[in-house]
Amino acid sequence: MSFSVAVIVGSLRKESLNLRLAKALVKLGTGKFNANILRIDDLPLFNEELEPNFPASATRLKSEIENADAVLIVTPEYNRSVPAPLKNAIDWASRPYGKNSFAKKPTAISGTSQGAISTAAAQQHLKPVLNYLDVRLMGQPEAYIRFSEGMIDQDGNVTNPDSQKFLQKYVDSFVTFVQEQPQRANAKAA
Ligand code: FNR
Image (tube, rainbow, N blue to C red; front, side):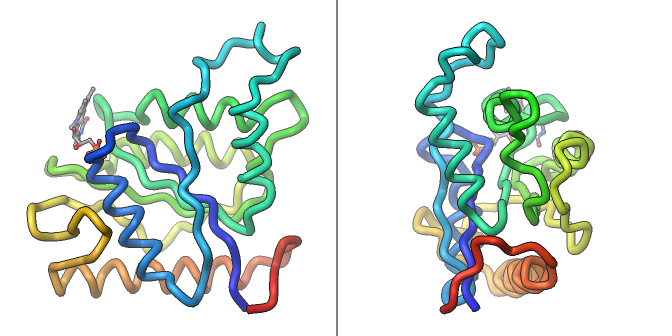
């Protein structure tokens, strides 16, 4: 059985290291899941006053998440916390009240930076937000990836053998985690 994954990258940069990591995770999941890296750079800053005329970009984001079997978040850390573009996307997808698109979605988080703690603080801040939104959060393995040049190329090829092994294990664990979930309404035959 193959399944679909909505990937949300917390950086808007074209040269994002987290985008590279996301592409790598998607490649390592080839044959196991189909992934769609979601656009979040066209979302307006969240403002409750915009909700009555819900922006088309936010409606699109919500349906992409709802139609996926699982969510994979790959995020940088900004000032020891969650980057604003990612929190903004989460806030839009959680609205309107009672129509939270993340509810019960199997979800895993990961992230990379060149810093010593490699997004650990951001991921720890993100977890209670996702728990509040009632996702099914993968607890293990964690993936705090300290990025170094030569680890992952622009196309998402993992060029360091130790990193390749670690990331493959992470992806395989994610696949098992998603497949073990009782509710997979969008499950498709491979
Ligand atoms: C950073 N960076 C950073 N890194 C880190 O490990 N911990 C942190 O708290 C921060 N804080 C921070 C704040 C802001 C506003 C910026 C712009 C950057 C550095 C960050 O990890 C680095 O720029 C990454 O390359 C960002 O991820 P992408 O865009 O490459 O995916």
